[in-house]
Length: 250
Image (cartoon, rainbow, N blue to C red; front, top):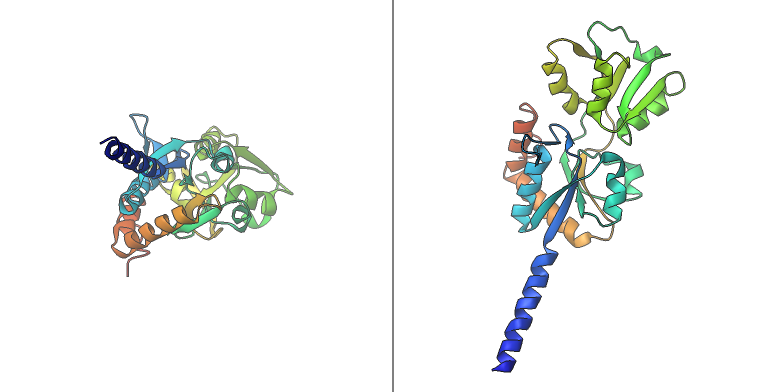
């Protein structure tokens, strides 16, 4: 009888350990609508929260979202504070040196400049201007490389802060993801507008992972493949990005 009880307890312990390993913590910024933001109840919401939940359901994983500032989102992944990043992160060669990526879940999105309506900016000869960016983004690197010599590139913790400084008249323009700027400009009722041509940077958006997590990466990619094929991913994109797509369903 004791042996039977011991065996049952051992099986329960192993089952509990296996279940515990299936809890995946997803780091997100909570400040980059519509990708991710905090709702009125103070909980993470947005496209990547819905997608993360769909991935976890498909992969039979239990997932928890962890809100983390953008400027430390990769260091805290590497430190083990969460297992995955889903935070409007573009795939770049520079980031690939530090972390791994899942398959993309959103194609490369044009980055765009925004300014006050009626502002005349010649992006081919920009000089003496203050350009707002969110620090640590592909737009920040691009602005510094292409405009930093003759202009002042001002970094902010969040894109919302950059937009607020533009509204306050402290900046001449900001550079950010078009998908972020579109609803902001629409909501401004004509106070702001896009300036210049679209700029394509990066290789699309994906989940970031530590390089020593091939099993987790495989589960996420398998789930993404299913969500792409059955149309779920395209539906989520259309829902959160004003009818964009479809991009993935055949």
